[in-house]
Image 1 (cartoon, rainbow over the protein chains, first blue to last red):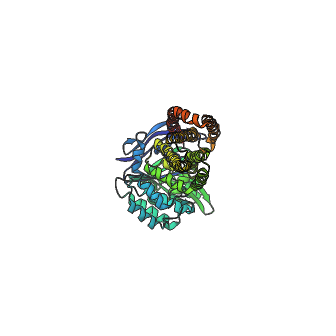
Image 2: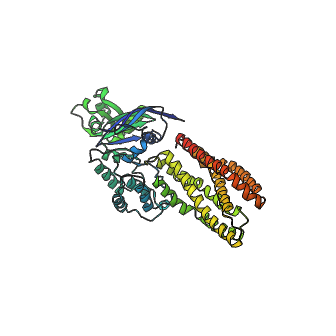
Image 3: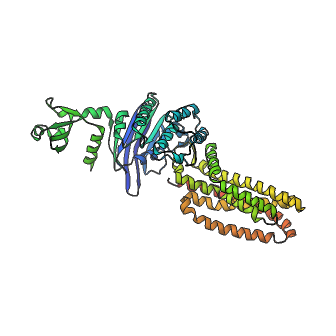
Length: 280
Length: 208
């Protein structure tokens, strides 16, 4: 079963157009949504939650159209937005009590455990939390009501590397249950690379790529060579070149490169930057 | 919706202390001056504005957007504000009314029928005041919706003048108020219900 299916989704507002977006996220998988600022990542997440009026297209969550009883569907969705949205005067304990009366499957013990794991103070007002602490509280809420789908908008922003690693591991554990899935946007592409099964590149409201991460990494690579050596390669093998003081660096399609060439692995970040430049 | 009410209650306790303080002051002054109904009415009117203030805090903290990710309908979000406002007004009127009634009893001028009519009238006027402003807030947001305050002040002032005219003589007051009370209650409840409905319609259409 698919946790999320987006078909021909589009929306237009001042200076922005999301153009016929198509995405499918199977259960048990994690999809990373990568894009520069203003590419449409947050808009996509808001459309999934039916927070905006779309021009067209459909969003299906666990087989159900998101325009029908979305508030019931939200019992199954844990959300972390880039801004937490918790009123400043509330403490983590008060937030827990509010959520206990909000979600049917709210798990008090799990929430308390996560607060302790993240070393979050129980009685401190939210306004006194650091950005990282605010994000950790959002994550604790999203993971304490037995959600099946997590929608995460920049969830690792503001977290220190140790906690970030912890959180990434936590998300990884979440999808060990094959009924669970995660859609996660982030600027920190290294987190997505570590975590995701699928990656989707968004650029100016257009999906320029949606592919399995492993397939991408095995299809593309980087060749470091001299300009003469580069000339020996088929043109269709070379996607992008950059001249450096030490020679030429080229992003290539592995299948068209002779075995005599040494191909280095490419990172998702390098691939994304290349594709965005191509799209421009 | 319990979660929303609980959240508003927490916020009311935190940000509504000034209302509590003013209510105590007005309660004491009202006890000393039982003739002046304004002293009972004003705290009630203030509490009617509580939902607007809470909505302002919600907007500032981006709670409205966050709430969209929780299993609530927009109708529930609006209803929570109306209910919290109604509870606050009822509670304050109960306290103020009790203080006022005790003083009237001491002075030997307590007439239950007339007193209840006055309290109901004050509640209705107060409800009308908050009812006028809230749909604007839900449609335009608190910043732009402040214009509604001006309209509300005009309507409430008009209502107060009318009330003052009705209560101009004591004997007439009992008769007039009792006779117009059913109409006032009907109008007040009608405006409150219409306001509630309009707020839901406006808020459903608003993009956050």
